[in-house]
Length: 426
Image 1: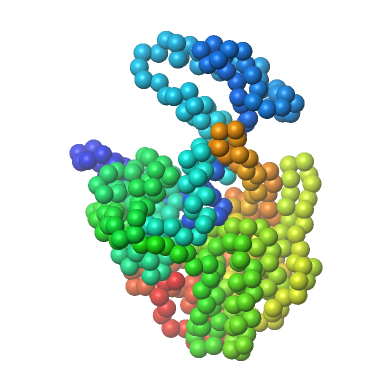
Image 2: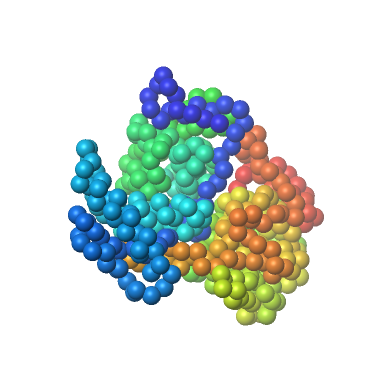
């Protein structure tokens, strides 16, 4: 575990033992990262907050029963803002805090709330390009700071030596421990050509150290193709954006022209994206009219999503690579391939983001994102929370990363009958 040093500058982290950070769900999609919204619709005011309680929306619905109970909340707020000796938050900030307080009782990190500024910030993240260090990051709740999920290959962070699972504690000497993901990422990002100094805590390294990274224009590659072990096609998908299905179909079609003996489909570090694209990607490998995922709602309704087109290949041997950062749409595709016994899944247990959120823009531009359904594999296994267990479990150790070995890729090649040589971590 770690703790702030008591005899040093605030925010410095000390690590002991072999503790490792747990992954937190922020977003189901890119950049791995993202607190969206959720909660209950409230729009009341009383006393110094503006008179009698008034609902912001319709009077009908489940929230109507809460309105009488919320009179106690506004009574307390009136006393607080009338009598408190000290600085109080802006009423709007207090309202945001109250919404988040309700959400914290749900134990559902995917039902979340975003202020207008946060909503705009994360819309930028979904555009696929930005100026920064070129790494997917997340907020680690165990260490209360930013954790690197994936440095993008050949991008500034990767070139500077930043590695997966590194913790970032300071940006240009300023501590980000105990802040939040949005403000931390805003500090890390910056104009192309500028330098940012990141203080890194790395497991197995006794002391924190600084890394200088020159920011650049980051174009996140959606798909990467290669050939490994002589004749095994390798395709890596980094996100399920609006073109993912076509890109995978085209990549597999092109790979087949080279007569490969097998195919490795790499979904490691892929945080997910669009459900429709997950179905289209699964359809590349599964026959028409096969179930890809089952969506179940709170009222018992079900929506079954099936493949709609002819596949590119149904007989080429496949291994799908996954890890703890494979989430959402990645888990849907891997789960469908596993359930239909179309290929083997190799790696570590996936993230466990198997739920559907409905985002609603509120009157001030903030967004409320509420879980409305959960996903199940074709053989009726829940994805949410527990994630998918691989058919063959292979960990990547610190020693592997240090020596730049990729034992998961090596195991995939071995299972597909290829000749295994030590391979660098992808």
